[in-house]
Structure formats: structure tokens, C-alpha cells
Length: 396
Ligand SMILES: *Cc1c(COP(=O)(O)O)cnc(C)c1O
Image (cartoon, rainbow, N blue to C red; front, top):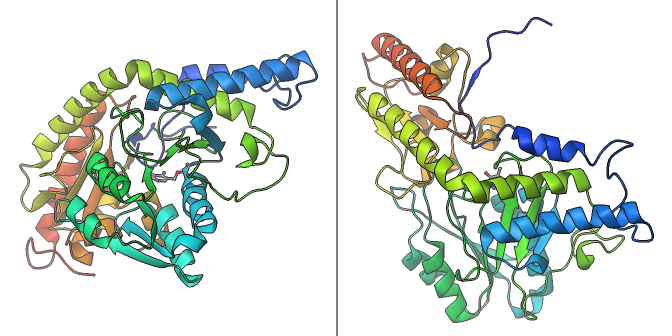
């Protein structure tokens, strides 16, 4: 098959390619010659070897985040981890209250779960963020009540890269005995996370945002007899009864290898990525009516959310050719709705629609950034020149 020119992929927040070292490792667990045995089949040596590989992967995940191995549970991804944290706790703590607290800028897997629980009779407070996309701990404090059974705030926002103060928010929850859940999908492997220090009780992870495969993730559950989750999926009792289903050995070792590489190379990766990201913004910031979202807040290394206010985002993306960038998050663009995150930050629906989310990663090269900068500048300048109201954004 003839192949068009390879796209310049700048959508790492939606998913990443799998690191070749991860693919190599995974391949050893699939075929006839490989360790394909069921890790629960401990009656034979192949099963025990597969089990050992699963436990090694669990250790790699725990090592990256400062957890103990037994605090890590494998799931099908962060969507499931978030569902499990919320529903698992809501079900086990029903008698203690019916109130949950989260923020307005969470991922759909949290917000949709929150809405479903509301329909089932729970009450949810959605704490706003400020104009820089930060959830102020003070606002969270105001939302916590004696009936609150869970507080859930993400670590790094997937659209803006803004880092939330989970230490401060977790401290407020800990003082009140309220379990604190954090969606750490966008921060794992990019920012240091030390759960032996952080006041966090539940934390969600995904492999495919960290150069691992899709369809595998983990939930950290702090070892605490008072912290009990009701399982969502029942069956053969795998994962100590919290998550039944045959362990996906190749996926799990993929996750483990990806997290090991992140532990060894994440810091150097982040420094390089940040430099490229800042160089790209340096060029784009010279354009008229272009605004960096969350620019005044601490941000993770790879995210660049910029509103190109003189034009419509969809047209801009159209003229970018084979530059793979996002308009909001992958989920909000699939729904065709302007980003709830940007609107929570005070952007109008039009401004949100004029926004590009550009996210860089391990395989981004300086050449790609050079081409991306030129392409965006050229497309924006042309579109802005023909926009109705000569440079004023056309709503619609
Ligand atoms: C991608 C993402 C998820 C969902 O993870 P999956 O493993 O794809 O289910 C959850 N939260 C955030 C912040 C994400 O970026």
C-alpha cells in the first residue's frame, strides 16, 4: 500500500506510540514459544513464570509512584480505574453519606460517572477552576462536608497541562478523614509522584499515555483497612477480588516496562520536551490574538493549549494538513462540543473552538517542531486575513 507522508504527530495527550522496547517485551508473552500461560495457573511452571512477570510489572508500577506492590491493581485503563474508584467507594460508603466533590475540569470518565451517580441519588459538587485552570484548594475546602464520601481532583489536566496542587487538596481531605482520589494519567512518568508522602488514597493510571499499549491501566489503593472498594467486575477473584478477569499478561508487562522506562528516563525526556514546547510557543506567541491557556500556572512539560482568536479552530486544523493536533480533548472533540475545561477557565464557546491542543512527547523531534511552527503560522496568518471583521473571530 502506498503510504502518504508520515503525519507530524503532536497529539501525545490523546495517546502515545508504544515504545519499541515495550513492544519487544510484550511480544514474548503471546506466541507458542512465549510466556502465554494464564498467570493464575500456578499448578505448572509456565503459569508461575507468567505470574512472576505480572508481579514484576506490578513492582515497576509501584516503584514509579512510591507505592507498595500490593497497593497496585491492574484494570483495563484509566477509565475503568476512575469508575472503580468512584463507584467502588460510593457503594461501600453509602451509609456514611451521599456527597462527592470533584472539579469541573476532570476527564469525561470522572464527570460522566459523577453524573450517573447523581441520577442514582448522590449529590456532587463540581468545584470551579480559576482563569489559569487551577483548582484552588480553598474552593475545595468550602465544598467538603461531613457527608462527603470522596473527593476527586486530577493531577495534570489533559487539555492544558496545568498541574493541580494535589498535596494541598489531599491534606484538606486527610484532615477530615475523606478519601482523596487523583486521576494521574497525564502526570505519571512526567512529574515525580511519591505516594509514600502524598496524602492521596486512590490514584488512576493508564499505559497508553506513557508509551505503553492501550487497554491497560492501574488503580492505586492505599493500604488502609478503612478504605474498602466494592468491585465493579466479579468473577474469578483475580486482583484479590477487586477486579476479576484473566490477567492480560502481555498488556501488564507492557505497562510495567513503560513505567520502568519512565522511571529511568522520564526526567531527561521531560527536560527535552519542555525545551521543544517552549521553543514552539516562543514562535507562536508572536502572532496577533493568540493566547496561551494556563500560561500563568505551573504546567507539565508537553502541553501547549493556545487559542487562535482571529480564526475558527476547525478551519485552522483543516489548513494544517498532516499535522496531527487536537481541538479540545479527544473525547470532547468526538462529541463535537466545545471544551468544558476551557469554558470552566472563562473562555467563550467561540474562544474554546479557536483553540488548538498541541502535545509533544518522547519521539517529537526539533525538525517536527520547526515544520509545525511554520505550518501553523502560515495557516493562521492566511485565515486571519480573510476572516470576517478583518481579524475579529467569526462566531459560528
Ligand atoms: C486518557 C485519559 C483517561 C482515560 O484513560 P484510558 O486508559 O484511555 O481509559 C483518563 N483521564 C485522563 C486525564 C486522560 O487523559
